[in-house]
Image (cartoon, rainbow, N blue to C red; front, top):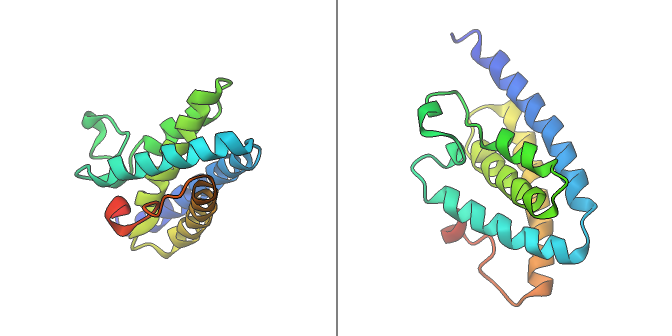
Length: 145
């Protein structure tokens, strides 16, 4: 199994990278008002995920808890591709929250670039949120950890 682990991690990193490009493209195409809404939704999703027993498995059905990684990114990605703007926003927020937690403390070096990309996008959403609202709590350690 030790021989297969790097292969699975590499495939996961590629999958997350491919999904991230689509998610990022969707975020950049959003109007400012929807960006502010996405910022709030993402903060809420990250907070809810951090309160779960296994934040990287947030959005995963209980019977699938023994998979190498959760199904939250896949569920979020599918929702993000919806024609319904509210469903798409919630999907993007879910994807960002799960990808953040999945890559946050990963011991695998091949997932670190994905974490940096997610963090950059979260910083941009934080700036949108901060410019629209006088809120200092976005991305505080207590809300994210």
